[in-house]
Image (cartoon, rainbow, N blue to C red; front, side, top):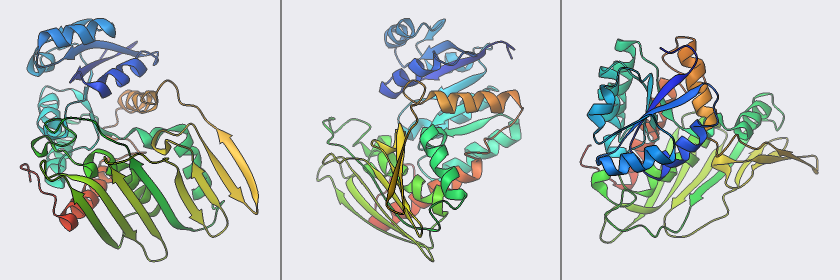
Length: 327
């Protein structure tokens, strides 16, 4: 591995890959070495915009590039498992965009190969590395708001995407739960652990048959989380975390918050914590730290964390009756 720069490859040249590449340019020891799309024209266009050294018209050609250290998988959900496995088979470290996989069965295969090949592998759940979230978790873990008894979080926007897009298409892992419901589920899991019981209901698209609005209740011994995701309408995405001694509000949009408010004894404390760039930079830095220290997983978002979260989402999908071809 190049000691001065960690060389990245990006697989998939969609919207999220553009955002990721913009942040990659802000990380001093990162280099965008190669990008790949299913068409060379799209790869060339993306590569030129983000100053990639190489562009490939197929994913397989990128996997064969011996200079790449780590690959970011930015394709639709249904390809995450297959492409992550291929990347690791070619001895590349992998950061795979969330959700890690369509289901737990796929996630286990990916994690097992990471361990067998001794390669770093992580789900790209950027919220876990967001400075505001890190600060909030530290405050909660120190007991500043007492025991957390209630979480309320949503992720909602009005989608204008066509029915064959990854947002709606079941073949591509479409639906609100895996695409955006994963964020509220993550928040409850990270702060309260795996729920004792899950209740869930969805509204399904009449044609696409995916969920377009889903509500979840995570029930714990002494706490509850009321969680929601939707493509049908927009909401002000503020996450509320209530404890026995105070409350914390992650500012909108909470999954990539630029600050938070702590309320205790009637006194408000507003904390501003802007991200570096859009916010992908923080998970990129975590990848670099793990690779440099020969770790195959992050202590902040471990393989087990990813398995727990996808297991929770599997259970939610089971409750509402959302089934994918990959299941």
